Image 1: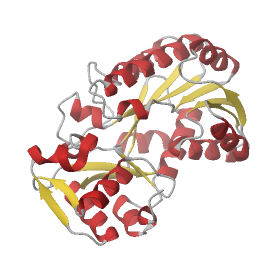
Image 2: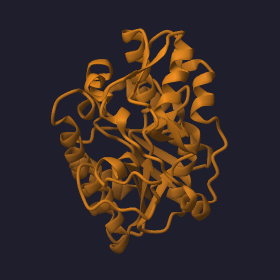
Image 3: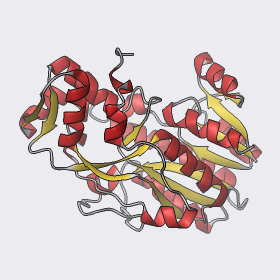
Image 4: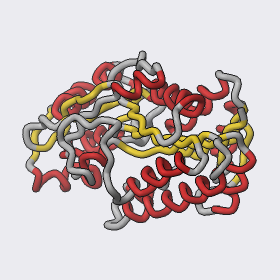
Length: 307
């Protein structure tokens, strides 16, 4: 099938492209720069030059494909430190999602969108183990997820994959693990907040990529899915693994001190987000097979000289 993929040159997108190509799909990857275009082309995919602000281009690409996987996002805006960056990035994403969705209405084509498990805690207040059945009424990025699910009632085989805060592998150069490691290098110690007992779910990049392919091929319309392998790893255990990798101590900081040591990720470092993927595994016969987060941190690739 001809698949239009946004974010095709990114950390997760590049793995999704490889997974799709290995399954004999024809991939068209959106590229906003020459470097991105070269990366997509080198992987064996077709390049479409453009960006997420070109709504007309997104609509044309969606209609021309047999389905869409949407991974593109303005992460630099969301996590760049500006007070309204997270909200603004979500607003941009919601417009892209609406544009792609409207282009697919009535086609019965698959549309796989990307959301996050952390939103269950951040916006939904859910601190127990979250499931695919949990729904947050609205808010930044959640509005896009809910819009995609609603497309299932309008002739689109839509699904939303909630990624956990930690998608880890040697392909991850700019995610939360890299941000924690950069902070630990700067501070001379690896920080966690309070007792560090709060937990994050995690998944290996290649396991997540396989789930995107399975969702594209077989997820029923209006389905929420969880890309989760480790249901919950404590932030203290993560900090200790980072400290061991860097040869520095792990140390608790107070909630009041967190921003000074962790910057833009201080708030996220305090989120408790245990998450199940039981329904996803059963529905799509998806079973993670790659290293868990702590095993991946112990492998050492995250601690090679800063990129």
